[in-house]
Length: 621
Picture: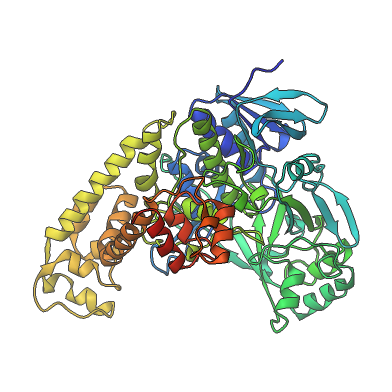
């Protein structure tokens, strides 16, 4: 009935979709297995992609020929570039999306791929021969053979939904949980744990009074996520902002005794940086109000997502509290918020290519690894799909360094440090964030994926080369062109920047913090005329290179120093327990994680610089 597939992907959420695409574009024959074909690519929680650090990840996925950026662009209802008041390392694109368009676009792109087949059924286990994964077992007992398997089960592994004192099995609202896989993996020697996440209630937007809320429009000049999308967003939907109050908090507290968060029924750890509304009230009791973002779910629906009001309190408590929020006085609820507990597997059990250490050709990606967020899941899926293909073809793994991408930071953090709470990406986690910005993801990563031999790149490579040439030409012009005091002194004074005393090269003026290229073009017609031949994003990237040249050079020096350690390979059978001069903790951690390089070893929690020095001696340095 079935052929033997190269890669079987279990789960069709953000991680599963990207895993299937990545393996298929590398040439593998892929089977994407899901419990429900109607929920492929579904946005289970908020209808948005990107945000702080997450937007950088989506751009990186796109640069690696993943589909999340294209799907996001096709379903965007509002675009905003966050943190524009800060430096470019912090600029983060975010899109509000039409939930149904998003999922529909994912499904149509997957179905259009000749290397992807589908199977709708719960997968209850994997087929293991010795220590090699060789397929999956379905819920009705069908064996489907493959050379590798990628598990992207999301919140479905023994998922348990909580609403007040009610609890019932489920992977998300209206869908049953997945059983069997956790128990089998534990039997194979894997360590598992429980985590928790939650979602807010959904509201009938027709019942809200938006005149009592603050309007939050999109950007005047919205951008795209995908580097190969030239079509600009022509219209946008507004979001709105409102606030809780003391009355809202008092109403919510009436249900605290029935909250599974506080009475011990939920044992899994929830996301620290996206707490429930009851958790916020409890932890920040001194605050009189909390911000709520009123976000539309799409163009053709009245459904509203109340971002900031995630809750597992009883539904009547949620309802009464929301009615006291400004603009929600006549509110009608579609469904209450809920919390969900699910199984995960500490990611220190993985190699750097996301293959499990215990079972060869078995890969984990997404929330099964303890992460939270669409973007974090999607990038893991892409890396797992790529590496599943490479592994079964006996090729070297594709591993991104921390200086290559936010994706590299995320994977490195997971496999070396693990996580005891849902892992979320932040710009602060990336030590080289000026080098790995959202605007240059294509320059960093597309050449890598081309070298890897990925198919379906279209004109990506040509676009990257054109961008490189444009940036060189712009930077050359700025470096060689002089600016006289009479051209800019009046404008500099208006911007609280000291006047020029003599003619200087334009790059000297551009490097000032008060100066930007867009404004300088207005007072220098010759500059405006020169730049008019280039794409706006090419100009922006060139300006960042010029303005932050010193910082960029400093980070490159740091990267070179770290790369010396990354080049020192540690053998899989290295006997750490035989080195008495290593600390006991270092021996335990190194033996457990089995780092691939000395650089990876240096980032393991509990391994000190002196331990690294000892290893240097033992590998002959």
